[in-house]
Image (cartoon, rainbow, N blue to C red; front, side, top):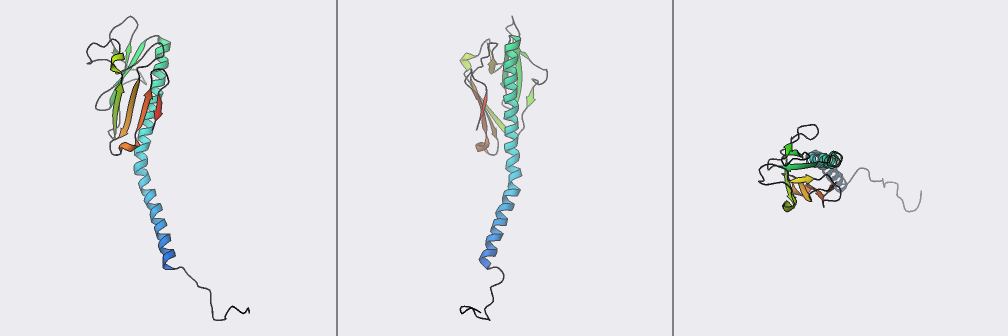
Length: 173
């Protein structure tokens, strides 16, 4: 035996109360994160899905306007229902598009939408009762706009679809 050790000294066995409390605290934090993530994750997932859907549709309609040599439009009402418009060649009246994927669509109730445009740049609109808020021109330009997609319950998780009228529509957090 070495000089510093005694035969009756046994190594401490078990955990101290502080160690147990730390482990319980860590487990509690992990459970909290696990249980809350589906709640906040669903809202964020819905926001991302809707923003991605709109971004793809904006890109498709912009290409369609160029290929068809016609103006196309987009409008959204206060209830989150949006629809697509077309202004056929040699026409001055907007018509609602009903073909897939540009048929009218109602956004989920859990989301709010705010559309900001440069209204003085909208063509062919006498009264604002009918027609689009955003126009996709046949020369590949777009009415500059910002479309905010925001969860009703947590405004900080929203995203913005934005374009300056010349560049593609981008999703910004």
